[in-house]
Length: 445
Image (cartoon, rainbow, N blue to C red):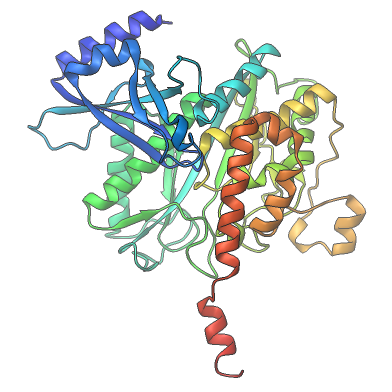
């Protein structure tokens, strides 16, 4: 592994060799919107040493106006050339940044720092946290209405499907940026698609997920269409999820694997599952943070609603992919609740925190539920002790605000800022008169 100084030298050398003129410094606000500004290559060496100051007062969840000075400190390990610039122009590169105070200390409202803190907690327990998300999204003709490009379904190969070329261009661009793609395919709903990233450590993956969303949108715009990660843009069709595969490693050994267990899961894995199940309702505000997120989390559209786990059953919130002999490193759990419009830094942080809570406190894992939970009677679900995720942003706020696990994972600053933001979103939605109400009530009342 290279040292920080070697990384800096590499960046300076690459910038010179590739003819870079501008470097974009990226970071995110607490809602997961990508932010950034550009510097010229002449400022690069100083930026790598001292960071670049900026006004954080207008960034969602960042500093108040009277303490707005922030420093963006580039992470040289994230340096890549942006491949969508026209050929013949001076090259443009990007680096993700850690946000610091003017005193050079980590800024507590920086989502990247929030994730780093939780990864350190795992490291102190001897673990490295790996994730592999499946990001679903839609292509539409433009951003004004959900007008689909195709009527395809799951894994469909459609003759002259323009989205095949869009996905291909996107995958090639991601690979050019050093982001490893595992699968790409048409999803269940019309005009819905999925590009899955090969698993990596959670910090790298959060950076990749942010880049993934931008590249998908960039390629769409270049081809005259619009891509959206909105969780449920079309009524009556499946919404978009971000099923997240997770594992903990101790060095080179998968801490979730046990060769003697019937499901090949270790005690650590069972306790991690138990932690996710117990705290799922609390973390849902972070993994599913929008009003629209709860239009996806309804029975009948492959989105998880019930707090259960199973080996094969995709109606459960947590699925354990079947073990394949010789692939111990691939032993993992799949958490199916998040949607792709979340902030990946905060989402990975709270999922990890919930699982670690189960390990630290020795939670007992309930037995797997291999029946179809959607088709169970309410009495049967009650008998098995199967609860449900929140069914609205309002309920998710109420669950989150009483959660000590989420508050510790996010830190007080992010925790209370996020709650304030989401209460405001809910209030604005609650007082709106929606088209459904006009269509339903105006003709009869």
